Amino acid sequence: MVKFTDIKGFIFDLDGVVTDTSRYHAKAWGQLADKLGVDYPGLGDAVKGISRMDALEMILKKGGLENNYSEAEKEALAAEKNANYVNLIQNMSAKDILPGMADFLAELKDKGYGISLASASKNAPKILEKIGLSDYFTKAVDPATLKYGKPDPEIFIKGAQLLDLMPAQCIGLEDAAAGIAGINAAGETSVGIGDPELLHDATINFTDTSQVSLANIEKAMQ
Image (cartoon, rainbow, N blue to C red; front, side, top):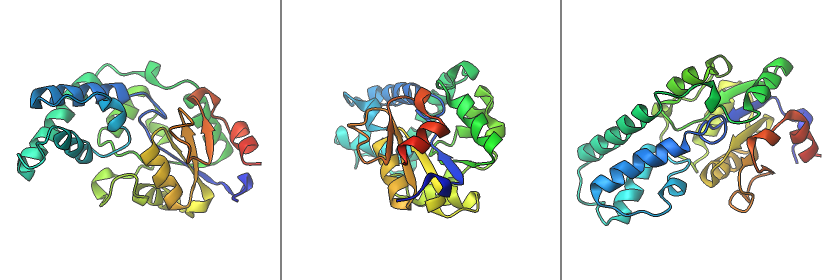
């Protein structure tokens, strides 16, 4: 068992951890699903934490359309979803930071912990700028460099490498089961934020972001 004193860095997912963009993603995917004629109850939860192309494949498969489009056409559909999403997030601001996360990031920076971002979102830099947290995330994994999406551990391993740390020295924070699986597979300590029944594989569980602090993490690791 890793001790709290071993931890030197924190690797963050963005959506549902730092800010709540999941509703914008769900709405943008819903717009595309409606256009494709795919009825997908629970779409918002289904696409949480996975890459854009993986989410598109999931929707196409649900509608029995997975063989109806070329790769170029699928790329165009994904781009259309992204355009919908970018339009929806234009009005984001600091008010969209989830409760307690600005204080937690400030605490980490003050205590000298490494901070990196492990988000599959190509829009992460734009979102961080809009909510005023770019200065905390000067180290971020570029999704374009990834071969595999979550639950593969690649993004979290790269998040640790950006901090010049071993995975065992890092804590990963996620709100999706796919992300928790990736953190665990990377050999990092996982913090699940949300329903503990859905995130039952997390090393540490918090029901919401307001509970996340160094003191509470240290207590959970004792």
